[in-house]
Image (cartoon, rainbow, N blue to C red; front, side, top):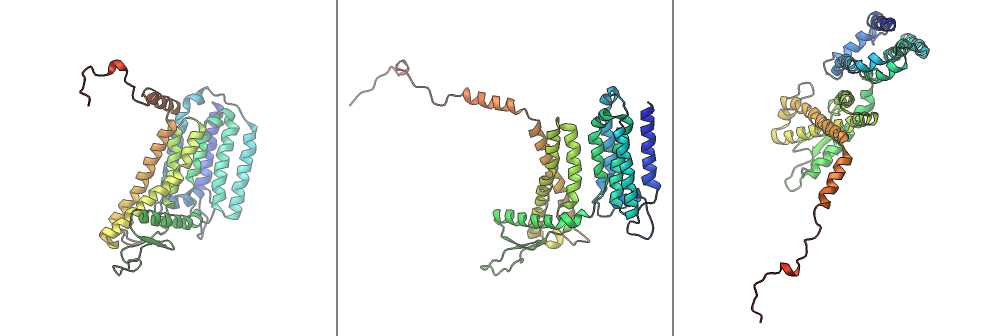
Length: 334
């Protein structure tokens, strides 16, 4: 009980440190707390990082899920955790001196893990490792937009052009734009029928981190074994690309059918159809996530046995007829 009390006090101290102590400028005139800097992005108008609000509740649910194992696990002080805690404080100080909020995020992750190991020991840390690792989704990392957004735009535009041509809708790729192919017989030039540009919001970067968080949470509660959880987690990346591909195709076909103004609108004022297409990303990705989860949970040995039994019970050739099976009536012979 003393260790648990010390753990609660330590976590409250960390909350005060990161929520009240001025840390970084946040590209402004004065210092702001790490929590203030993160909350500015969490509550941003674009909604890229609003899923971060769910992280503390999901981590608390994981702790509650492990309550029985924690009840029987021994609380033993691990002095290795003290060394990790000291290192976390050093990273905090380094980020403060460098005015780098991302080092502040890293120090929070290190300190929570170090304090947990120090006061509760290895058994508790092992049971709560996933809940601790899940805290990574708390931290908004907008600098990744510049690294990932443009390559994703190129991938999405190339994939969309390939699918449209496969479906019989002539399309060409110009940079990150998807244009209708020229039609010499009809006198239509390139882009005359439709012209859709895969902008940064359409690259899939907005949905990628949220879907990775959801896949980690879904895998934790539905998949037994570490390899299944990890496999489902990494499936979020291609599923996000697939869902975004469906969205771009929906917008392109909508442009052909209804025109650009109705189907897309503008970047500052997207149309209702454009906003509706955004939900298609999550519908496709979540459906794929559930399907892959069921495949991972399937008893493939039983499926293989049933499959083999089914074909073994069916004769490969029709049975030959014996002499006794021949009809008794006779026919005239000529």
